[in-house]
Amino acid sequence: MPSQFSLSTIGEYSVKIWISEINGGADNDSTNNELSADVQAVPFIPEHNLVIEEASGTWCGWCVRGIVYMDSIYNAHPGSVIPIAVHSNDPMENAVYNDGIQTIISGYPSTVIDRKYTSDPDEVFSNYNANITDFGFATLSIEAVVDENRNMTAEITAVFAASLEGDYRFALVLTENNVHKDSTGYDQVNYYSGGPAGSMGGFENLPDPVPAADMYYNFVAREILGGFTGEANSLPPVIMANSIHDYTFNYTIPDEYNAGEIKAIALLIDNQTGQIMNAKATAFIYTGISELSERKINVYPNPACNVINVSNIKGANVQLADMLGRVIHEEHAGSNSIQIDINNYKPGIYFIKVYNGDTVKVIKVLVDM
Image (cartoon, rainbow, N blue to C red):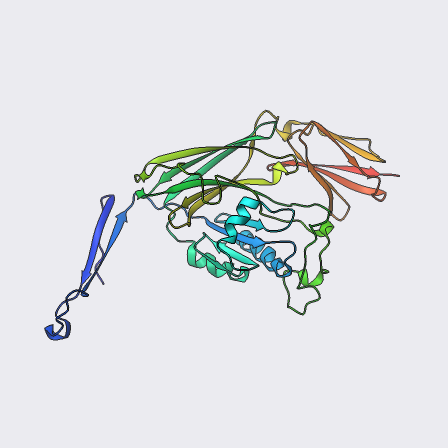
């Protein structure tokens, strides 16, 4: 219809469309001559972030397609795509998250788009274009603070653009990047090896399986606080437009997780439909630990043999890389110093990389046996 309606007042409106004089008035059935819908005028349009949950596993040879496409869509749209890799039946599985995703998918690999529908990972770019402009319902913000004992407090705040009534919930997801462990279960089965299945981001040039020593997994779902469907009663049953609601989650980060690589992701979930309405991701804020930029990092002995000691690094992340830039050791420093065993490394020049957030310090060290 050429006419536009200006809804200048915030609130709900009913719209009715009907037709008359059908077939010159010969239509005697008037029960199907009209349609109606309810619409809502809102005070603002929230930014919408698209959540893509990837069902994956190291045992799944086709799942390297998910690895490639999840990295690609995030690199193309880092400000509006929130990728979450939900592992199943491998060492990175989170049982609660995996059980939830199993109720949605029918096979591997699969990507779940805002929990509205599933698709193959190679469709994520078209999924993005089709769904990124969806109405986000609320503007979300999140502050995740971690103390020196790895205790996290994450407060989610939502400013709602629309009035809602029903069962709406918050959940908090923790994902970790660059998950790497040279041990059984971290080898990635690779059906693209050798190229008969076509090219796939370089995996066609890698063996089957890809050794764990060469694999770094991104967006790994470590925890979902509030459960797969969100925390019950974390939001009231009646929400008014322009109202502000918040909720706080608490968690202690396990020592085996690299806290410097973890993101906290707030999910706004409609528990009536199961869909994710909006989301927001953030990195941790550390307290009780001095800024990395203010510290003098000590690496000794240098030259080194047997071990390398790195000190004044509490709360930071430490990597040891070779001359080619390959990371051969990494860990999060829960205490003020760590010791790296280098007995199995060849003599030569290596680099200690210490980082926390956007601050990075690199120290060259000579390994001399």
